[in-house]
Image 1 (cartoon, rainbow, N blue to C red):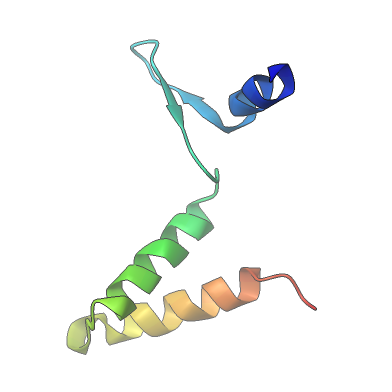
Image 2 (image 1 turned 90 degrees about the vertical axis):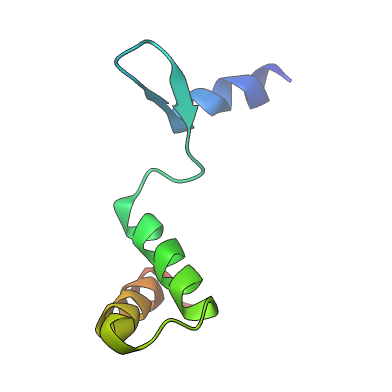
Length: 66
């Protein structure tokens, strides 16, 4: 239990007001990936097509090689 609670600090972002926000991943790349996947799943096309394609490329580049 202690180790689990202590591990939360590795993913904590402290705000100016002293509050703490927990992030599953502290990487702007993964935020971009998740947003891109959400746009693709929502069927967004047209002006966002370039963003979706480039975001997908970034996501694939971040995946572990098998």
